[in-house]
Length: 293
Length: 259
Image 1 (cartoon, each protein chain N blue to C red):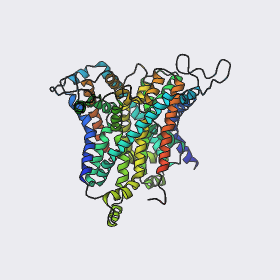
Image 2: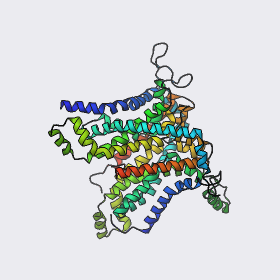
Image 3: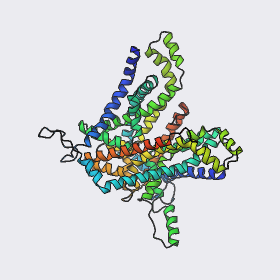
Image 4: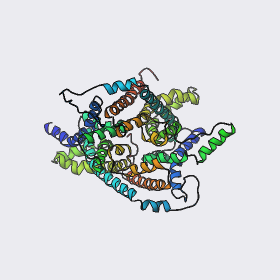
């Protein structure tokens, strides 16, 4: 047993040490930074003041919770992330059902086709939509042509919340399909046959058999989409314009432009708590109940 | 599930695949378009590729990306394999949390936390800080792939080797490692791809002087949509496709990330 433990530390030690230095410590530093004062020229004020006292303050937290602007922006980001999650689910569910229901030899190929775009560069996928949603493109022309018939003002698709949502759905879709498919694939077809024998119509079979059984997959996919979508900054930065900015843009601004590290840290911590907290609540709510279903 | 698939399901799936691939197709097609605007097909040209290969900044950024991705792949494969092995073999509490957390939290948080960390320890931001940051988030992905491979391995082989007098190290070197090799290589390819594609964490840890391909693409796209970006995108798509093909040959099933 003693040698066994030696092996554990010998092999596990290096990756553990690396992650402590380059992940755990930076995270702790951020936690401390959120309670420090901003420096005169950006960054942080000295931790120990001239008087020898620790220079810690909750002023940045107070500033956040007192300001309607930042809370609103959080609400807006939350709404965008939830909408993205819902749209991804709406697109991914029939797709995953189809893949799970298709013949075995096609399944891997169909799944691979979903994952392939995910492996291409993130910026390329955003860029593709910058072309498609651009004013010269057919999509904008058709929409504005239709709007023109009704005498409405022409709209711009790019640099809008609409563009942000479309791109967010696009870049996150595979994250929803994978866990959903993995879940749906395991369903026992006998359950559907049994339901049919008992006289259940197709939508009843879906609503009372397939859907409840698929909830773990739905929530896994939702978490994989929701968390990154909530904190995204590159998508609103590139396609959002001024109306489409999200909390990630403000965090970036605090660290790279305003250089108010304590406030940036507060925003980051609130983001992390909100994202992981909501996911945890959803996971608890989705836990299968013994007496139900 | 072996039932007849209703037509609406086929239709919605076809629409979903169109949604996934049409944008990428547009990028590729217009990289050969003889027009500055990505709006209308004018004629075939490879001029944008020629221009790309004369773009010194882009070439430098590409070289940086390659060096970072290679170093990241090597370091995170070694560390990630070690982590995956320990997570499989021993009861550990802290390591799995530290391995998975960088994957689970929004990327921007890791980016800004590392930015503060590097500035606080007075490190000049640049290629070194980018590489250190990339290794930190790639360890987890390698560890997951390797652990999955270990879980499918027959433990009795290692026990047999140990009974025959092999040291733990020899048993690992001659039994475990060859058996998990496909997982290790797949993990390395994954780390390479993740590193060469990473934008967010690189954006925060790069500083003012260093540039990588994604950073270069970002700054070009920020200014204007130009077919030169289509050209570099097409080349990157090809590279990704190549890596995926190799990875799936070595380790089928790798792409199902949830296994």
